[in-house]
Structure formats: C-alpha cells, structure tokens
Amino acid sequence: MKFTLFLIMLLFVNLSYSQIKSKPITEFSQNDTKSMVLVDVRTAKEYDAGHLENAVNINWYDPEFINKFSKIDKEKTIYLYCKMGGRSAKAASVLDSLGFKVVDLKGGYTAFLEKLNKD
Image (cartoon, rainbow, N blue to C red; front, side):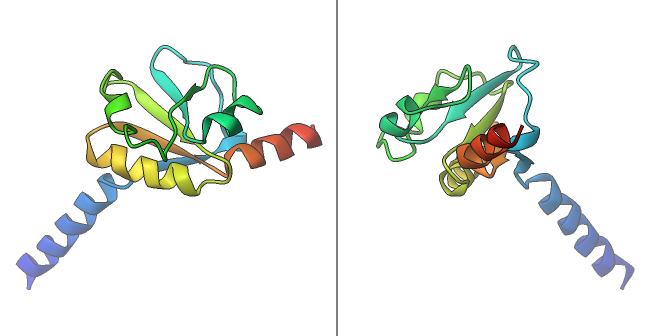
C-alpha cells in the first residue's frame, strides 16, 4: 500500500513539473530581455497591425514554425503570445515538448490592448 501511494505521489510530482508555465499578458514585464525571447505567433499581417515591443514574429501557421526556433538558445525562456491565447497555448505545448523553457502569456494581444486602453 505504501509503495502504491509512493508511486502515485511520484507520478503527480513528475506531471506537475512538466506543465507549461503561464502568466496573464497584463502582468508581463520586459525588464530582463537578456534572458528571454518574446515571440508573437500571429500572422505577419496581425503582427504588422501592432505588437509588443521587442517581439519577434514567428507565425504558428508557418510550415517552418519549429525550424525557426533552432537558432534560439534553449537556456533562454520563451514568452509566447497570440491574439487571444489559443495559438500560443498550442505553440507552448510543442516547444515545451522540444525542451524549451516556455511561458504562455494568457489573454493575448487583445487583453494587452484592453488593459492599455483602461489605463
């Protein structure tokens, strides 16, 4: 019985470490740009219409999406965002499985603009 409980607890701890980190985009700060990469996974047209300062555009729908991350240092944390959060969540899952440190910025650019307009 104790061994079974130990295995269940070990499995729970292991799964909790592999979960992707997320943060509301409205709480995001670009203070430490040397240890992170900010990536906008929207289309080029969406990116050109407005984006976060210092964001790199890597379109989630691009067939070369994964290959474009080959030049990014895996020691740097990648912060991802899209319009509302769907594409960035999918991208975060893929990049996490490839060994990148990823933070998904929840709410997307839409939430960022809403907060900006309130302030």
